[in-house]
Length: 146
Image 1: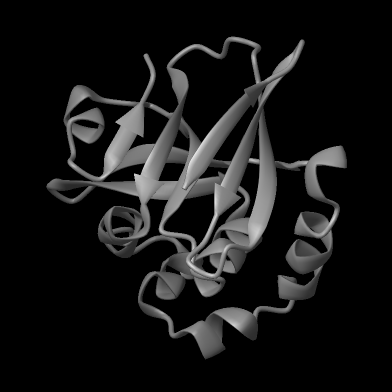
Image 2 (image 1 turned 180 degrees about the vertical axis):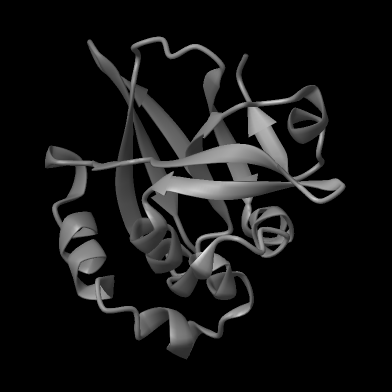
């Protein structure tokens, strides 16, 4: 479940997993050309992520929960998310890229936050997406507000 809370200069996103654990993320209102906020189902994220053969972190697309939790920065994401709505964690930043003949994604910021959310059972994750295309936005696992 996702709730959006509008503040003066940002959107606060409330995510709830299957165990009713609540975390908060934030996205600024400021406009960035060719970027937008999108909510991506984890299975869809993995589909695009695994295609990126140039990203050493794409191994996480097929990792088990145990493997995700072994990331050396995982504890920092745990600490960041524990601050709640008083200090929401920034959404991760990804870019849509062209990998061989299929589109893929690459992370610009927020890999650890993303693997923390996946390991903790969140099914839809918000991202700031650069180089957005119509094809990506029309994928059944991607939701946006533009």
